[in-house]
Image (cartoon, rainbow, N blue to C red; front, side, top):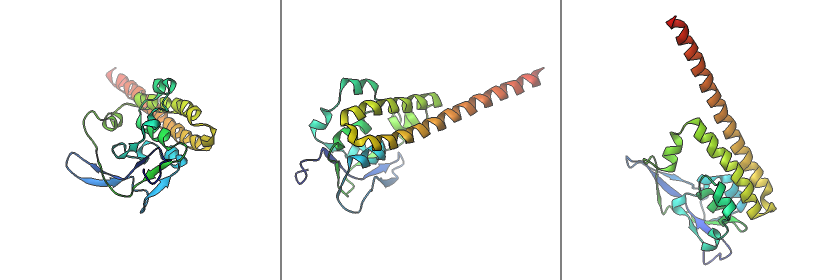
Length: 182
């Protein structure tokens, strides 16, 4: 950060660790230290920068607005983007943190086991939040936001389709069971 004072922060790869103690490296984006652009962070989604590895300037957090805080379903992705705009985030190619996974009551664990309604609600809120975030960081990143919005739109479609299939399956199973009772 001292070498690049214009950056809003930096991050590094991290270990993921299961409750069994198995470890794997995530977010290993480069063999060397480098600066990732705001575009990279925006389209990289929340997993691009492991939350446990973020080292950010306080001024990045000052960019949050009441409007954004009202709509965001989670905070780490938005913090990453606000920190990356306009100069990017530094990347240190050294694993220096551990991100525990499959922990009871963690966001990831809760989200993975949630029903389609919750997932649809989450990605709907993410898309709405992108509009507010885009207004904060400016039009220089319109193309980046189009890319990530398209990704969320596809995910939403997938969950809506699965929800519909599940609903149809239940309806069909119910009718099938009703007929066999008579």
